[in-house]
Image 1 (spheres, rainbow, N blue to C red):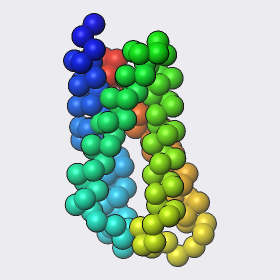
Image 2: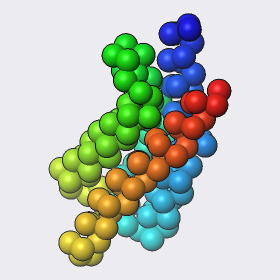
Image 3: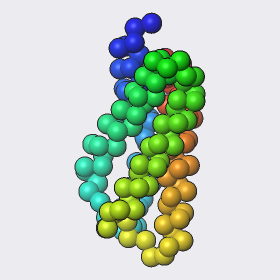
Image 4: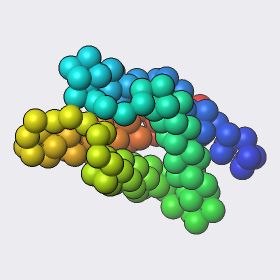
Length: 129
């Protein structure tokens, strides 16, 4: 197995529009409802790079430490969701939610979205290709 080729493949899969389309649609909806307050253009560049990098790291951990790819993607999906949740919590002005309950819903959506994206979209494509 060519490790560099496998890592590049995982990065490309993770950074493709197929991988983060659901999350992108949610962000577009939040901008239309005026609940999102961050730089949309910066997000559309950085999100695919971040997702691709974490996909690459998941593959690297799987290869290097002989961990199943499924477990590796599960771990990195949780890490990704945690990172995003921490970042939106510490930045004032990321979202403009009216209630604390809406913030809790957002955290749940982030975890569900990242679990779905990494484990139901990226992981199967990575296995197939």
